[in-house]
Length: 125
Image (cartoon, rainbow, N blue to C red; front, side, top):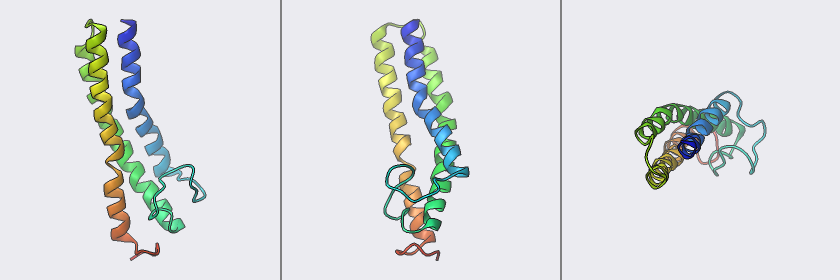
């Protein structure tokens, strides 16, 4: 039971991180364009306007996907209650692998939205 609880907690780290940072980026993007913290791509760092737009857009996607991933991560773990360490560990690995895909996927629509709304120099179209 202890291992199951630990793996449940570990399986919830990515969705909870997406929810917390998604909400934060939607409402409070980093004040300064920087290379250390935030949604950092060459397009998002063109201007203050692209920076704020990218964080709001990406943050909303992360927040929504985090909310979706939360129950989708808990439900499979409930079926593993009482199973052996190997089954719990392997299943948790699969769950976290799927979560990593959803962690990265929002980059593509965010970049597409940036290119649709801003020119190559970061000015709004």
